[in-house]
Image 1 (cartoon, rainbow, N blue to C red):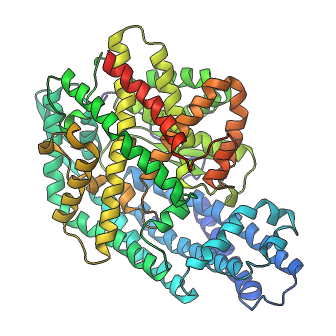
Image 2 (image 1 turned 180 degrees about the vertical axis):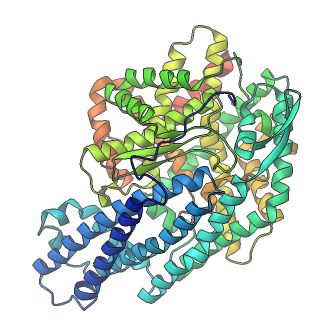
Image 3 (image 1 turned 180 degrees about the horizontal axis):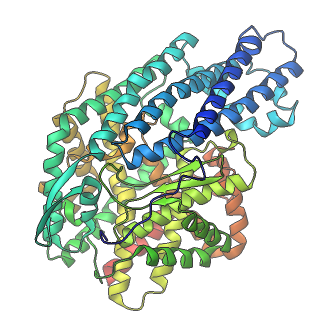
Length: 601
């Protein structure tokens, strides 16, 4: 794939350049909105509200909501634009400077939202009456009610203001360091008789290469590189997670999971039902690992075998073929989805080329001012990467449904659990459709393998990541952790999740170094939402199979509304009770069908 000209995203529709007058003007306008928010709070919200008439409170709420919608629209657009340069070129010092400058404005926005949240909490007793007074308040009732509920976990006003300011030189700075270190690693690697330097994301992608000797060498090279940088990355982990532990304590959170559960808009009963279903499914996946190992003539898989293809391994996708493949299968599900994906491809929303300085993995970011998204992937021609492109297009389609429904920025604040709904659906669409059209067992095996690699990562590996992060945060309450501590925790978490499905000699103790989710300040436990999304999306796909095209409008309405309800309430629209094991077991049962089919081939 290195010889193909893979697309870079086009940002010109957003702004003409990182140093353009338009970007500078919009940044100044954003700062003016922040000034307006600060004046609004000082003049109308900070004084005692015990004697303020409800109608006047409603006007104050309306004004604040409108200002925040304007602020978040500008903030997200500008942030994504600047981050688009940083994420694809960590050597870009101009973009890094712009990012640092803009983050100071974002701190002000965070401070204003926190102050507003505290004010809404103070009028909590009359809030239901306030919400009935105006259309703006009514249509934002969910986010306002949630703000009032979460206000109980705020520190004092000055403490919250200081915490926001210190985040720039604290947790955010540690997260930046992790991204910079990991994105700039270049590895000398011998391939096809020649040694050349390749970026770490490209080396990691070799885990899906059909040649085991190459996969093993790539794994060994990766481990060597992580050993060189493990100490600064351990400091990053301590910095990000240590900050979270301290803040959770000061804010009166029950434990390290409390805030993540609230952010996910679920309850502990739901998380316990999900995790118990995942844990009980581990033997099922170990059976898959054993069958895969047997196909390779082994007793157990090594880490470098987990992503190995099976079946017809010569199939490689050019970018054009991947695009046609995705469009065809999206079209079978929904013409609207196909047309949307075509718009994304033709509009150059996607940056696909792996290169030095570019972040690994993949993501999708909304650009609300132009009602588009931008997608980052590291495409290598594998079926797995085709699935990644479909996954990220699903996120973009999710954004588009909200744009099309006219949702405001506050109405679009979606929990991580539901944020994976459309992405998992799109992956499932592609994998299921291509399997249905497979003509022989070798092709079916290759397709099933790709699907099960993804399933096992989201159930088995995500379970290990949850165990890892939980122990890290619990232990950081007592003392910081060394790089060796982190490796030990990771290996034990992998042992608990993979069991005898993975050779104990060849796990991956450095998985904590490069997974970006561990280093996202203010976002802990970005692991179980992936499992929630996979199983929730799988359950929705099962409903689609029963109901056909009649399912689509309701599904699109759900995507447009994921910022306006709890996960339980939104799932209830489809008759789904996410607090009960039966739903999660049913979704795992669909994955079991794939495993059984794989093992029978």
